[in-house]
Length: 500
Image (cartoon, rainbow, N blue to C red; front, side, top):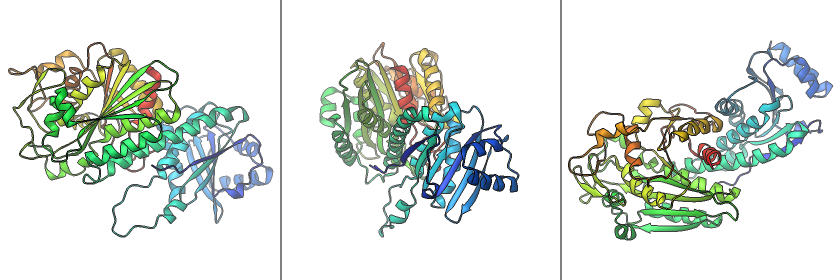
């Protein structure tokens, strides 16, 4: 895991700063500012130099926008005029837009002046630190001739802030937490880009166990032999097609010294998905090494809980296997008995995610946590409904739907809540089993899949399902310039703390 520190330092008010120590300076001003704001912030000589640049270019402080110019061959200055009010998503976008050119030009050491920004200061500290961390991200590579990393490392952004004196303590805490969350977002991005023959169930479980042990999280692996004894037939149906014998459910347990609230996190961990007997075509199969993204979000949140010492008991369940075509693979028309005891009529073997999640949700909800959240790249239907800018949210309790939406707005990782009314389950009635896995054709699969999952959550346990439609955005999304987005860490943390 990358431990590079991006956030460097906070300066208070009128601290004397050696500006020569920074290759880029960004002054953030609210819309409606004037020349006087620049004069007030900087010493007379520097303010005069900056104002002359600004006047030459006809820049207007009353209109939101950005002006960037060279103070010297080695130093850039940017003025970023922002609206007086804006969302977390907009703040993350602004941060990416102002920092991306500096990253590409290797202007690594950045000072951001936020003294005039008022109540939006915390939001911008969070956004700028988060954007800098993800812009520093180095994806996994498998080249025969290793590319020299030194130039990439040397161009990494480091970010400092100049702030009002009374905001230093709050901003320090926010910056540290934002950096930690952004590193976990990068962890999800790394895992979802690992090759399928590299991140197998065996190597994934081994890696996750090593990481959690370092931060004091206990782990317990339930292999196929144990799941067979438990009669977790829905999980086993998917796993039986693979000759890779490392499949199973990895349970992670973080227990704080204080706190009584309990949450269970469940993640789909299909390390490669061929579709099984309902074989995907080549264009739809390519990229299916990322079908374990939900489990990566669960792993990242568990690590974050331990590192930040959340006062919440967090249990993570990573449902890890492959969906492979073989002579042993499960088939349409099979009838499977799940861990809950309910029987499932199989319709489409490419709907494997809801199978492994069904048993894992039963396992997690039997512990009677205060909340269960599952994360999964579950349906293409949610992308057809929302595009790749949002993920979809579902719950068995209506009160949680508004909290899902709010957590998306506050975190900047937007989630749109969908209904989960009982009439959406009519299409899943089976003549021979308790429930059908899915329709044969048509329907609204993102909603119907959520309804299916809800049937395997123990009665009375609050549950949220997140269909990660924004994991592979077609265009830059918030602070993420290139896919995958690592979507779910910021949102998950916000939802957990807002509910519990």
